[in-house]
Image 1: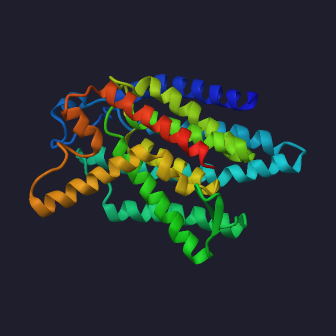
Image 2: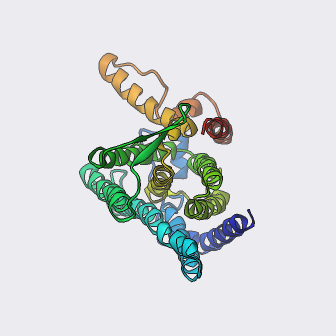
Image 3: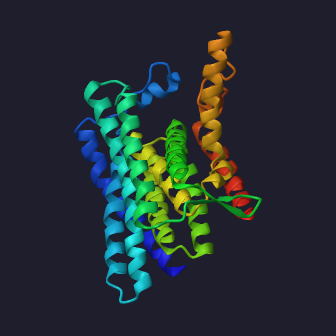
Length: 329
């Protein structure tokens, strides 16, 4: 437990220090949030708030990840050396998704709109990273293509030709869900920190040290970022951060062979996604809306809930779901 705490503290401190350096730079370069005109009118005051803060997360993950890799690689113990090697694909897939988000954010800023990358280009990038990750696991690490079935307490083994598309689906669904959750100050960061903590606890239970190390890095990074992201936010994570966190959650869940557990512990992002799907489908069919606005957090916002209340309630729901998730493994 001591070494996890040290990693969390190191990541936390480095994130805070970098935030104090990078946020003023983002302000100076006028890299500000561009709000959707069709979004809540109250959000227009956030126009210009420094965005693309996910770059802080990328830097911290790379730096602290490199420190941990070197530390374990230097060990004379073969098992410790293997931990160093196993860290690489998890770090790479997380940073890979973050870079796609960074390109998307830069595209929005250059074009001065909320469009960003063309959906086909973004999808191509996500496919390349997720397919690369799944093939590295199966072909290089000789990873058993299995998933754990909650409640049944059994593992299901995929044929490789089916496992790769399944992994891609998990990545696409998770990154999209976390991206949709990132709509008000501190919401996505708070919810994902709790989910990542749950997954890290599972890695401790099953003795998967590389995930414990990486999960600790992410927890410390998210907590540090949250200091600047809570209402009123001093910085937004942008797609750089939301895609990075979505990729991290999916990557860790797949590595733990527990992506189906996300159906329980990531209930809030799932509900956010479903609210959008339901809203669009119902509107196309009837011309009416079920929710005042989608994703779901905007519905509560327009119903009179303050942003801090939404973040608190959604975080508590996530905490309860994570507790349930830990009970069923």
